[in-house]
Image 1 (cartoon, rainbow, N blue to C red):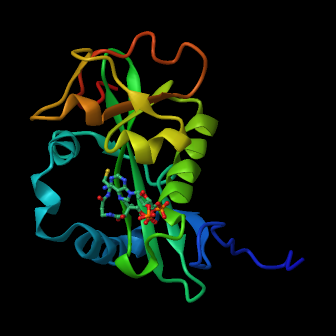
Image 2: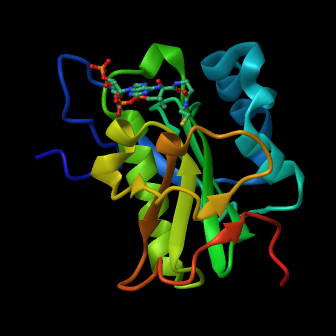
Length: 182
Ligand SMILES: CC(C)(COP(=O)(O)OP(=O)(O)OC[C@H]1O[C@@H](n2cnc3c(N)ncnc32)[C@H](O)[C@@H]1OP(=O)(O)O)[C@@H](O)C(=O)NCCC(=O)NCCS
């Protein structure tokens, strides 16, 4: 059964990429930048999500998840930030998988691993992100009702998504998405 291997194989399509998930640490910083540059290209810093992060959202490396291949190289990134919108929330992103490892199920799997870490932390009751609802729905995300949340820049309302971490977790989430006050 191969139980000794810490690596999992995404169960999708013809492609198999061996990987394991780890929390982010400082030693991964350069490798993360490389994956983000390769996956997003030059438009990387133009996104409204980037404005949330640069305005004081706090990176949560212990909840962010990296996918490492068998050589220990970073091939996937899903970062989690602590923010606030009427209540303490987590802000998910950027999510990126190295182009050479895409289409094997890794993007969804690393997202699910990060959301599970957020849920286990118990510190916030919801996660929000900007992204495609069709992609993130299997990880528990749905479209935020129009006008409920405001980001510091333009966002297509159909791409503003949230996920509750416990029952009723969305009840108090509303208003401006901003840096946490504590
Ligand atoms: C989005 C991304 C993380 C997906 O990684 P992945 O490992 O290929 O994801 P999965 O294998 O779990 O799922 C792939 C499926 O996701 C869907 N998908 C991928 N990118 C998508 C997008 N931008 N919008 C909607 N759906 C998308 C497709 O249906 C794809 O199916 P396919 O493999 O049949 O083409 C990766 O394509 C990436 O790094 N893209 C560049 C950065 C980016 O756009 N990040 C997301 C920001 S919200």
